[in-house]
Image (cartoon, rainbow, N blue to C red):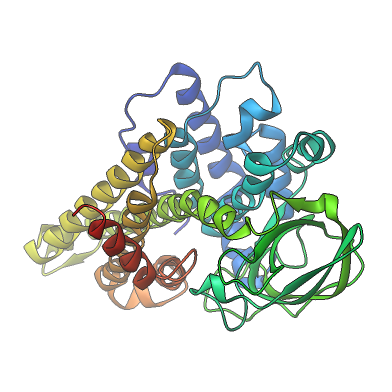
Length: 391
């Protein structure tokens, strides 16, 4: 099935004329440039760098930083840029996820970089032709990010970094890496953030992971062996890295939420269309209450998830703290994507279990969204801690 699902029927409210035109541009790009290639690329483990390059030329790759690139350009609200991410995810999750990771990798420099760093790197990092990677997780410190053991030892005007980063999206294909490493023994106050160009000596990449899904998005370990970088490449103050990481993750979790909603919307579109074409007992299966109610629940959960992440994005646009809301959005949206994609397979029956339809891939893709940017168990920890602050 190559016909694009019903993302075009989504009612997006409160958009300016410019934003409406942006959605039309992105939707057409998805239809013309992503839909014809996604199935083969995922099957053949092909990284679609050309798609990111085109999105860069369109100004979409770095949409959240549009006003940074051109101060004359009004800022694009997160409420809008995240819905653009959702639209792309409805066609090709790996690309939308890649955009979210790139935004995450850029955020420390844009938010915490010195004027000198911004003057040197800003146009290169967010100019639209480079791709970043965010390096926080390690083999033994995924969800417990403060337990990372990679080190950055001061040596005169340089730092020397050693260690291994794991589960790095764009590992081996990114142009720059935002790396977190330990500069002192203190658990949270002993972590610092560093900007490392891909061609830095001592930076090596492991074999891409063989994954259940997202095969067109390379994920690998990154090995740092006596990587020497100038002190100038440290972003923020020494010991500020953990706070920088957390501030970036709030936005990153909204990106994952938007991706999950786009994926779920696509699965619903296929299941809804199939249910109106497939017949059993002389009726379209959509006419059976059991199927109709499943579709109704799927649509309701997707809409609720979209409302939660756009509400959090609106708070972010107002300058509010969103740790609780970002975790809620990530938790609800990714759990919804898992349920919706599983139900889509069920509605398609045996066909849903075959690669002739995308539902089986969507179900596999949905699983990882419950894990990345903090597992959903960690999101519940964050939310419960925030609730205790209410007392």
